[in-house]
Length: 229
Ligand code: CTP
Ligand code: MG
Image 1 (cartoon, rainbow, N blue to C red):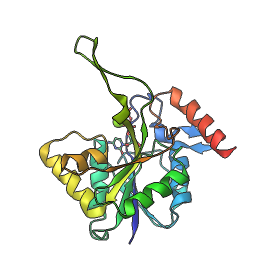
Image 2: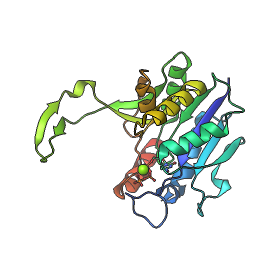
Image 3: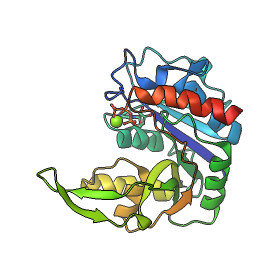
């Protein structure tokens, strides 16, 4: 069956507060988006890419895309809407059991090995799967007054990374159900959970950083250099 990669890249990078959306900032000789796409292509050269871009994007250049088979999708106001737009756009072509992986454009440090392990985990996984890492810090729940309400047991807590994925039909149903229920989504796993599924946590590398704040660019630069060494 076919592998689809959905890369939401339609955000404005409010927290980065740069002169352009963060996916177009320079990184390791190209741009954040180009680095992300290069990693995905190294792992899945035959996949079909759905690249979600803002409709008024003036920074995108098709030379950033290494995939032979790809299409541009008009993104939505929220990440989940950008992903939903891609799922809708491929409805006529995608088979129910095709695998769909969603990966943030802002995560250029994802390793090829983690990508391959996630894909393998999805092969016999009815509830979807995501890359994740166990939390290292002690976790505090805050009360409204800014004081500690309690310490959360951290043994069972993970950071959710991307990619996240499931088969096409399941992902569509989950996003549609979450939208109907008004569940606020920051990832695909939340949508699957909201419909009673239990996506598998696939332990990934801790250096799969999501570039979010200005400091993260230099960090990503170091991570990529260290990975190449
Ligand atoms: N994204 C998207 N469509 C949106 C919002 C976000 O495709 N309407 C994408 C971003 O481009 C990014 C990924 O989703 O690759 C993860 O989102 P995030 O890190 O929050 O990026 P931004 O929304 O751009 O940043 P911020 O929240 O700081 O504005
Ligand atoms: Mg955002």
